Length: 96
Image (cartoon, rainbow, N blue to C red; front, side):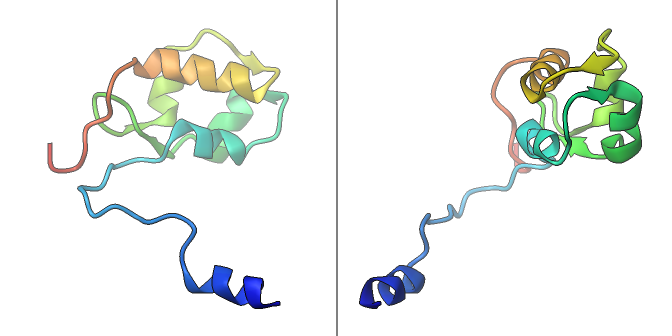
């Protein structure tokens, strides 16, 4: 039981003190959904969610406007489509 007490005393991961990043990671939004899923249902559930992109936070609804897929059979398909719509590159922090 002593090992359990020691584990509770220290955090598992140290949090940084750098500038925050606005918006949620697409993986977090994707994890709140069950698949398969239609785009229209995703918009009902998560359309107003702000997602991190290289150009700053954008609503999931605006990102899905650029996606031709109307049915996402897996989480991976959804994440890939949104990442392609958002663009690839580093995500700016709130101070940049």
